[in-house]
Image (tube, rainbow, N blue to C red):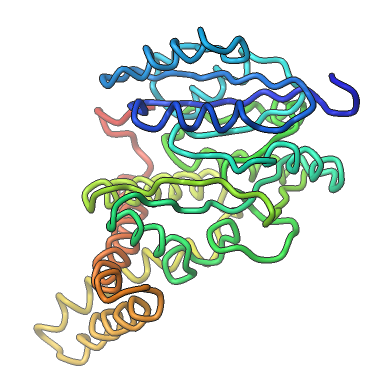
Length: 328
């Protein structure tokens, strides 16, 4: 402890992050924070030199610690990093994210002011390519991401989940840290358990974290398919955690599939896919900043919706069973 500012441990799970890791780490180390700051990077098996880069960063600054994460999963990496540190405040940071200056100080102040066990802010997309910018635009809109305030902003207050998060260590240790059996959605699930024992998860729009969206259509589809698949698993374990925004994509996917298949036999069913396509086009024009961006959004929106929806449905079909090649 330094004065009234508690020590802070930044937990950073990474895999194949050589391109963005140094920027992410230096953004953390450059934080204007009066307390003691340490960064623990948990490195999963990577082929792009991530471990070598992380080790190099540790030799340049004694506030950086590197631990290996042989399991490879994000929650396992987070838990390894948390257990390797001792600070009472734990800040989650991803290898492809970038903290705004003052982020940690503001988050700690918000924890003190609200008594929350976790606080977070806005996930601010910062694409480098035209496709990444378009994906970011879609993710920052309600049509693309539903009513999660961390995507598009809103009033400060208690919410069901936040992006990344700044946690009270004693609170997350009391509920068992991150669930290492979840490939995705482990942050939402942890927040559910924190709230179930009376903790408050707090959204502060003054907190911003830069995020680089996926750079290809294939990567985007895979990302959101996994999001949907693992959201279904979390709902299976915690049925009361289900929110309306999580029901819309699978229902839309079923409606579109039924409309396209059934429309060959009963034409009125075609109104379902026609209505959806029209809505996508209207929203693409409304959200896009240029003709080219609107055209890309016509592809990006359905990719997000359908991959999330069919990912959710795939988990229902397999009844939550783990595929042989699916990582823990």
